[in-house]
Image (cartoon, rainbow over all chains, first blue to last red; front, side, top):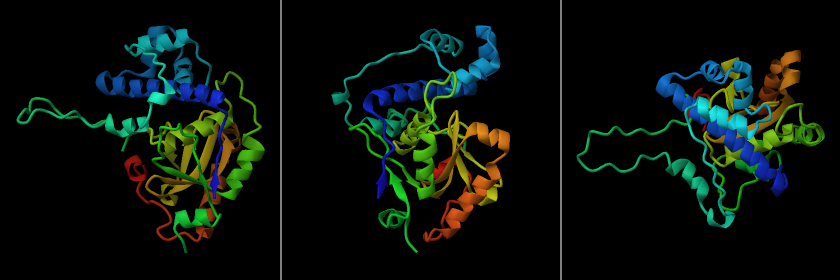
Length: 123
Length: 158
């Protein structure tokens, strides 16, 4: 037997959008933290907000305006890309979760570039 | 004794069918106990959004289950966390307003035993009863040994 906790398609589009924004923000912060030790406190200082404000926005626990999203992107030194893709052209897209983490092939004999495979979470 | 797939066929557990898009394939599995489903339908589903939240508790659970099943990256202590005592191998799924308890029967296969609102857990210190409940359910299930993953890292369970 199987169980389906599904929601209607209109609602699902909104919930998926919120989830993807939250995941993108947290992924960006993890990357910036790894690269230059950026913290939520530093983001808060840049935006003249409290750390709890940043934390609430980053973990998706409170409503967020487009202006706040842009502010968070600014604090992360990132840009925001918006892409509305036709649903019927998206076959096989969740394979991208795996395949976009595989490094591009390097020229044979070229050892000057390090190969980095992204980790999905702390070990 | 039986595999987890056989337990789902026997209706002892229910396999969660995540609300995937038509172009997505399931990458991981969630199995629900009857008690979890009852809690979901009776308590979680009708619960309104908490103040200042984007989405309802139900939406939060549905979204995280979707991300898990569709193979999205999961971060430790953001989406998933192993609970103390670590020797019991009970994990929680973390959402802004909800916690879901259970264990990994095998890599990528989570058994959800119960859920609770985060506020109730924080104020009533309810973690232990939910951990004990998950262990009790696991002990009762006629699941082939080993009944759970004993490793502690995300890469071991996902």
